Image 1 (cartoon, rainbow, N blue to C red):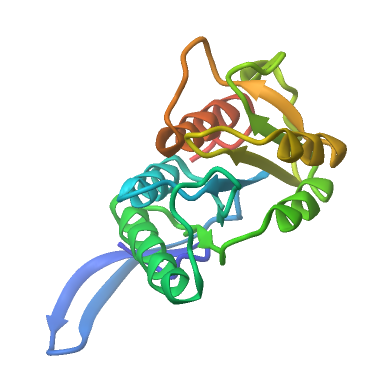
Image 2: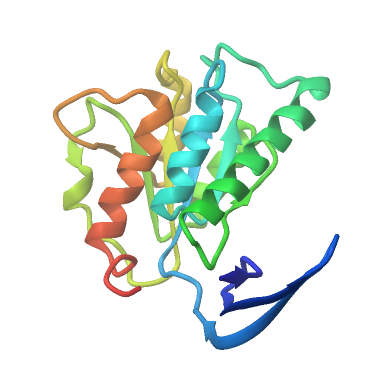
Length: 206
């Protein structure tokens, strides 16, 4: 199975191999439209290798866009020298996870965002959700649009600051809880994305 990561896939049998080439007898071609609604997760940068774990899980679940976010309470700070290497690891992790899960549309891992940049994204979405264990709304009960953009914000282990909560709320975001338990920042994005995918049309077709 060969894909360009942009919705095109071919299935076939390997007919020949070379040092840098593979010959394939193509048996079938498949074109898959992009999933709708488009799902973006803004992920506060976790510490250690939990960032790669979060990216791997979100890719396997089907998230379309992953945006690292430098939240105020992040323990790790991606300075100019560190950001490029960290972002490269996230992108490599996403690419390998996309292959493993046989995704025809590979996620885009964007450069690190500021809080102001996240606010701009929230304003442009059809559904904007900030995950909060104390949120007044249950994520599974929120109405999901049939198309357009859905955006989830996952805060850091230390939680969101009051200023961040106010800014996101002013941009139209809803504070919602995933369930009765508190999830780690590295797993919350994938779990929440699964909830929204199941409640929308994203998982209704293959």
